[in-house]
Image (cartoon, rainbow, N blue to C red):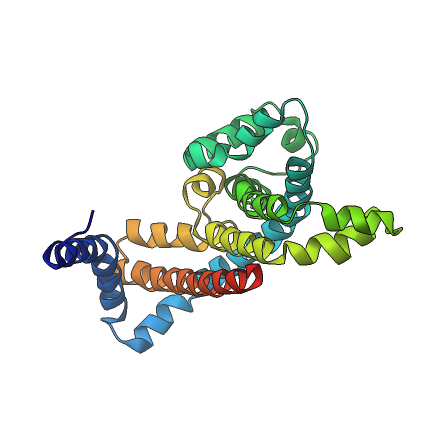
Length: 270
């Protein structure tokens, strides 16, 4: 069915209005409120000891979560793409669980499991290794919510490229490690990079699961998102807006990287 020019124009206008109301206007208001006190005040808001500590902690969590997701995500994707086994559907469902479960429930589950009164509470009570309300709890929560990204970006690429080159390398005498480094890894590099970018973005922006397992103490277990919430609750609106702009900047960088990766993947597939 061919639409008339007037209908096309109306649909485009409606789509632009929809995007403007949901995205452009709210983000524009945050930018305006963040810079309303001036650039000097904005810099002071994002350079306080609490802000720097929260930023460093967020980066530390990213530095731990991303390698772990890569180390365990790529082999899991290989197993799912290259093998057929009983229970594969259950494993697929478990991997997608973070998409369906509220992050708050994830935090509660971690408390029930790792808290001092939880199923594995002896780790804290007897071994004196604090997980909940500390860095390990934040890392566990972040790993759970970002678990699917690397796997779900790498697995389709493995299905697309097949295993012909890997079998040829094995026939020529390459061991599994050589095959992975010289054949498999270069073939999945764009999907893996895309999964890493999404993992970084989600880790930095996670709030629901992290707030349940963090003490929220400045300088100890307060991430950027928790500091934004803390400033908002204390009535420091401009300080919250300033940190929100920092997170928006990270999101913008992630968006640019995604666009570049999409173009590179399109060129590579041609």
